[in-house]
Length: 164
Image 1 (tube, rainbow, N blue to C red):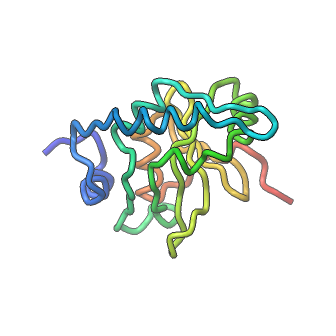
Image 2: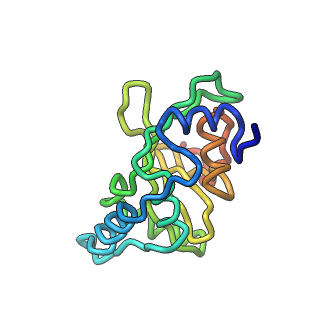
């Protein structure tokens, strides 16, 4: 059987409830409207664009967890839910300015006990990033590649210098 994902990623997605052709545009539009309506105390507003809405429609609401050992680091459980980034509008705007692109929230990574550990974001070209306390990370040129990075425990590329 040929899939668009590596076997471990395909298995994790299917366990989370994803199937080829999954598409919930109604929920994606609810998230888009919620993000568009939010303004930070300093006047920043979320960017909403097709790459983000399409990612939310296909994968929104999924809690994805890899089960195989990681290639370089432990696989990262994640949830695709852009509402997790509602109050990160200034941070996402700053990253977008630094990368010369629009950035929208995608979801969040979770620690071993389910606590949020990083914000996931997507840019207008479909590239995916992770923002955590140690810096900003590039997860891949597409959401498919980013899911493979997280589920297989592949070391992402740091965008920002290491703290300290």
